[in-house]
Length: 497
Ligand SMILES: *Cc1c(COP(=O)(O)O)cnc(C)c1O
Image (tube, rainbow, N blue to C red; front, side):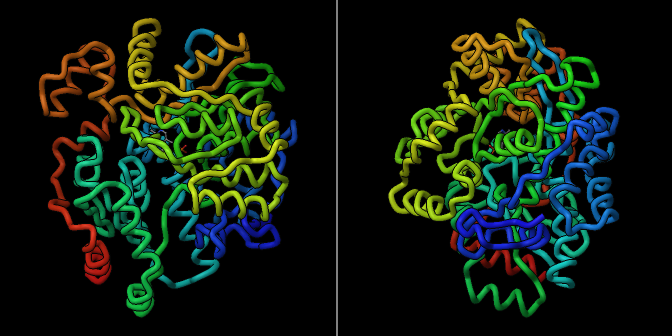
């Protein structure tokens, strides 16, 4: 299996190179040259397998330069009941009306980022052995909350690596901050920045492109890398859970083999829903992919009109992990929809960079309309959905999953489609306890996060997940904050210590 770049279709890289490099030299994203297929027989055989074995089956189609032993090591190190609170790894909860909630938050940080970031360190260190053997890999992450913590948990104490995470001092939820500042591990650093998420991201980008820093690190045999969601090593693990869920629903006799399903995904950077698209191309029977957004509805407009325009107001919402105006992974979808036309992709994404806007051609518009449905909802509607779903089904949604449920309800009302539907649930509700508590009718009368979620527990009869509860008594290891111009110094001090 070879990988091309979305901006250079004649490029040929193996998966180890794609994973170590992250982004290809001309700025494109790595894409598989051909999407591997799962035969009917193979899909049927997955039904009786564990998550680890299903993961192995999917990965072995994409990471053909990994040996069986290497792949086994990667999937078994990541997907076990030490890292996840269920041996199923992802759980499926059935709601009324043919809806299946796919809970992707049973990992150590209670958000779906764990599904990929628990395995990425193993994929990356295995890839590095094949390509840049002997180098120490240091991961830099700018985070608005979920990614940073998931990357820290994934890379902590992994031999040959270290990780440094930057987050905006006042830009993450109290629980997210607590999760990061109490992080354990001997190779981790967490740094609050006096600035917003963009400052963090620009600071990290500047460090990556600073020749002086590069030289100092090279002299110490250190290679900088990122755990960003455009890395193929983060996307491939996400294909697994869609394939696995289909097999599980067949096994549980919820659907018959060959029956089509809809998949709804609360979307930000377009990684998660793109993985569902890959699962479909591999042979999983899908009727519609439903893309759900919050008020930052740039994707809703794009899918409905073919015009991508990021020149719009940015909203801070109760579903912050979807507060994003540039959905990087969309580039991969468009590459496939144009049958690998790297010229068109370079043209469109060049325009996006210059003017913040591009328009796709009629052929792509037509394909988008056939494959996808897109919708969005406001914070008020998100909270109302949490309220209603709890009242009617006694199931507590987080703020991101609630957006997906609401957009799905709108889809159903509009189309009358009764196809059984998988709804990706991307976070545990206790990660966003404040908004969730308010949504179910609670009164916010305390600044203390733990007091608040104790009330949420009591009033809903649900349970705070152990990893979040545990942060209460953990020592805060990372205090204080840095000015944005001091980020390079923070990295160098950490790496030289
Ligand atoms: C990252 C994240 C998303 C968005 O996923 P994308 O792959 O970026 O589209 C949605 N919900 C939660 C809770 C997340 O952490």
